[in-house]
Amino acid sequence: MINLKQQYITQVYSPETMFQISQQINIMKEIQQQALQSYGVDDIWSNSKVYEIIIANCCDHDLIPGHSGSKDARNHLGEEFEYKHFKESSSNHTWTFNDFSDSTIASLKNVKSVIFAHIEDVKTSYPGCLDWYYEVPGSVMSNFLEMKTPSITNSRKMINISCKQLENLGFSKTYVSPLPNRKYTGILEDIDNLAKKLELLTGVKNLLTSNKFWELLVALKLNHTVNSEQGGRAGAHDAYDDHNRPYEYKVSKTHSWNFQDISDNVLNKYYDDYLIILAVVDKTAIEVTDIYAASPKQVVPLLREKLNAKIAKKATQGEELRRLQVSLSKSDLKRINAHKIF
Picture 1 (spheres, rainbow, N blue to C red):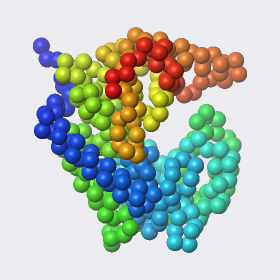
Picture 2: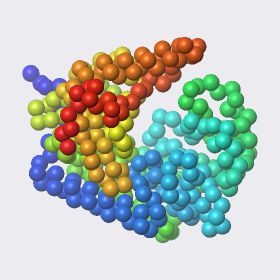
Picture 3: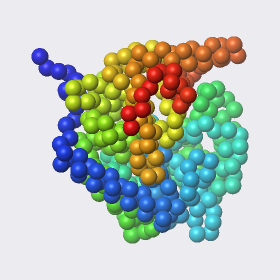
Picture 4: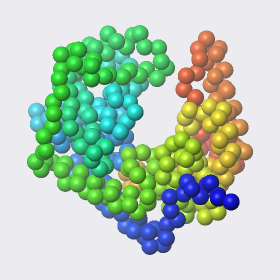
C-alpha cells in the first residue's frame, strides 16, 4: 500500500547534502553581514526587504535601515520614498496598504513619492526583477487615501490600489531597461546565486520568498525533512521525521507564536500532526535560538479557548471577529506542557 505522506516528502537529506546546505547558509550569513556593514540593512531575508533592494537599485536610491514605521529609501538629496510592490506570481495584482491609520496616511505627505513596483518573477529566477513601476507624489497618494479610506470597514484597515486607479489619477507606467552596475547589483547577484543553489539542494522552490526558509532552518536542527509545498492539501504539514510523522512549525523572532486563519477545520487538522514545534530564530544572525515541542492535544484546546474569548469580547462590543488569529506566548508554554528540545 502506498504511503501518501511519503508523496509529500521532497527528499531525505544525506549527510553530504546536509553539509552542502550548511555551507550555503554560511554564505547567506556572509551576505547578511555584508548588507549590514555596507548598507545598514539588518535583515534582507524577511519583510520583503530583497524587493526593496531591487527597487532601490533600479531607482538609484539609498535604503533606509529599519522595517515597519520607517520609510524605505531616500535619494541623494535626502528626499524619502515609500515602496509598494507586487509579484507577477502573486494572486493579487494590486498594491496593498495594510493597517493604515490617519497618521500613516498623513505621513505620506512628507515623502517625495510612492513607488508602485511590479516584480517579474515568473520568467526570471528568484528574486526576480523590476520591469515597470508607477511613481506618485506622496501628497497625491495621501490625499487619495484620505478620500477613499473613510468608507472602509474591514478590521485590518486595508486598501488595495490598482493600476487602473493610478492611471485614473493621471499616472503612467515607467518601463525599466536593463540596468548598468549600481550600488546593490553585486549583492543581488549573490542572492540570486544563493537561492538557486539552496533550491537545488533542498528541492524547495521559491525557498527564500516565504517562511519556508525559516522552517528549513528549524528542520535541519531536528533532522526533519521540510515539506516543499506552500499550501493546500499537499502542504498541510510543514515537515516530517524519518518515520514519516508530520509536524506543524511556528517560527517567530520572539517567544510569541501567531496562529492565523484558525477555523475549526484548521484547528482539527492540527490533530493530525505528531507534534507542534514552536521555534525562535534570530533573523539577523540567521540562527535558531530555541525550539519547543508540544502535543496538539494540549495546544489546540488552548488555541480554541483563546479564540472563543476574542469572539466573545467582540460580541459584547456588538462586533464580529474578522481575523481568526491568536498567539501563544512564553507564559503559555507551561499551559501546553511544552518541552524545550533545543
